[in-house]
Picture 1 (tube, rainbow, N blue to C red):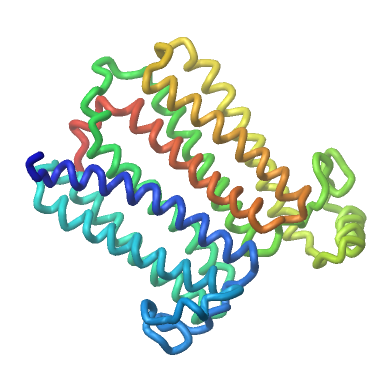
Picture 2 (tube, helix red, strand yellow):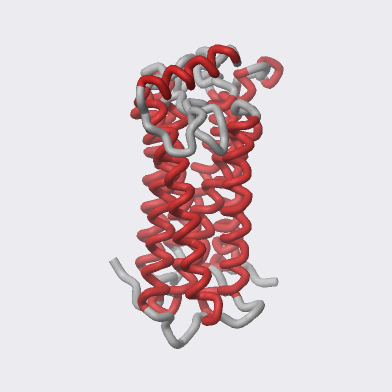
Length: 328
């Protein structure tokens, strides 16, 4: 088989997508286990160059924290390699620019990761670190889809405007929900409302002092940290966001269901999207009921990223007939 740069970069782009999703899971484990400062220096690890740090010393929290750094470095290197290869291919300039953007994002992500250590895990930087990871994930999905053979089999007749806009709206809602999720995690609000389906013993939260006292009494009984009204509000907004997305997705599926052929790319993508959303909701509930069990909470994070990726891919599929003329 003759050597072909286009084939190489197409396969590489898919590998980066998979590795990035895995990296998000590895990063989530750090917060879920609360081991973010197990390696207290950066860019070195206990004074050693990253790749010279002994594997025998990777125990406890160091395993998660240092392993995350190694994994992130590999993803960053492959993203750089992808940009360099694409630069030497005949792909449109907008694909080359998007690969450059993904490279800039992964470098920025690495710097933010270092800042979270140097500044002792400040919530604003930690939230930006989490949100930027999701943003980077979307850009590499865009690159991978743009390089794929699937884009060549695009639908000639565009979908109605409300379908294309609906896909964008749902993706934006999911992105906002992930921002709220990052706020929940990095403000220690994951169990600010420790019961489900009720909230502080109420079906409709009042956010009164009595409700906060009831919540803190329950947390005290479970030997968990007390929370403020602000943390309760953040947690509630995250639950409300999930409900809004469920309604929007149900409406979208209802309107879109008769417009696609069975077993088509669009129908399969929509089925995957709905399935991933159902899993994500289940994991969110399980996170509360298991009192934020580390692996359950981490799978909740990575499934949220997968959901955003599915939504982004669905946008590209429904807009694919326009990508040919896309430029920036």
